[in-house]
Image (cartoon, rainbow, N blue to C red; front, side, top):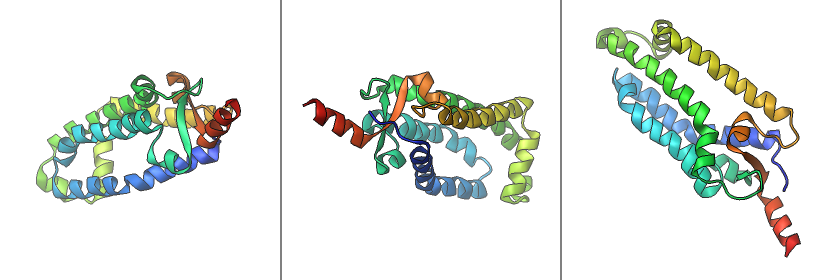
Amino acid sequence: MQYAGFWKRFGAYWIDVIIFLPIMVLSIWGDEQSRLFQLYWFVPGLFIGLWFHVYLVKTYGGTPGKLLLKIKVAKVDGSDVGYKEAMLRYSVLFVISVVMSSALIPVTLEMTDTYYFSMGWQERALYMVEHAPNWFNVANVFMNIWIWSEFIVMLTNKKRRSLHDFIAGTVVINKESLNTSSGAAA
């Protein structure tokens, strides 16, 4: 089993970001159309995240970026992941994202349409962060710690496992190494 290196995993992440761009653009467009768009988008957004990070990982072994770069998520023994492992991989990011999004909903509800639409997108985002409950800032700090810790942990172990891999008991491997090792065993 050959473990996927940092740059392959990093590349897969950026491919996923590019694939998600239309959804990000839809979110920004929706914000410009309705003050309550993020409230309406909250539950569908959760399901899109679960589909992308849990269902695709369980069903296909990875997100589109990983699949395009011929790497896959597997259990530490090389076997396919189940829903448990896929959900555990995504759990910390999911919880922090839900907490942060939940903190911004009351801020949006307190604004009038006139005030909301008087601001540009960046000004509105800054206003919402400044007026969010204090626990938003705590969650934001945790998100930053989580993201940086993911990189540091991945760069400091030979199997290039991130924190979410340790939590879920997973590794990211090159698909070719599976074919080679199964062919050698036959």
